[in-house]
Image (cartoon, rainbow, N blue to C red; front, side, top):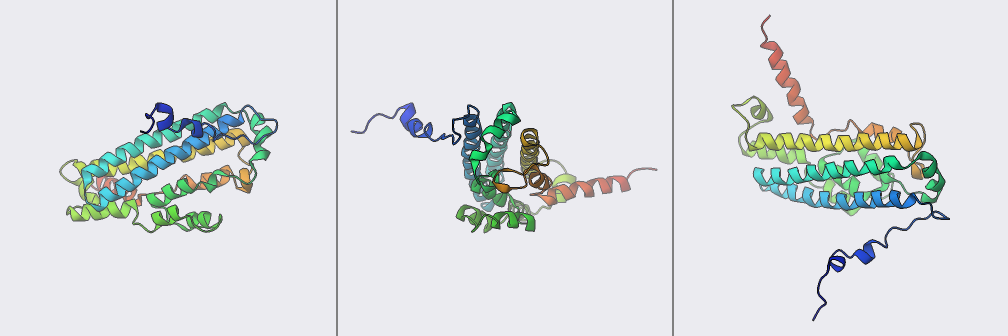
Length: 252
């Protein structure tokens, strides 16, 4: 008979709590916080990737309701990932400088899961592909996301199957589930953009705007280049068409 499952055994807490391994000598008291925030981010990335897989499956099945439900949870997870960065605002720059050299070549840009989220969300531009290739062969989890249609492509196919266009959603008779799904996609992009911007601000707060990142990266200069990347350009472009039509209909 197997032992009864307990809180600790179910969550593998003994193993989990041994995974924080500061490298500084003597151990700097703030390095634990730095490790925990990044490890926690990777756990949330795992949950986001799981739900992105579910979102892709729902979109491929042309199930707008299930797609919206998945996306709403992804947006909630993105808010958590962004909020937890605030913990590092309590890391004074002089403290980080005392253990930064022990990080070696490690850099957040090496996060395979984060790159997979970007790829799954729709990034395919030259700048993104170069960022992938500079760290060696593309990881399988990233390549799998690259091999799938983008979220925008899947959403447009769902619209087409429903006999609608993006303009119909915003200029038609009234909101429906596809309209709310479109707005949830934009919310996802905004949450992602807010995470990027908060990350830029955090890096600049700790190491300054002109300092290179860990592992020889460009630091905040690289991160700032990513803030304006768009997953759903078609959903942004419809705004220009709406207000363009609105202006033409205005009275003198």
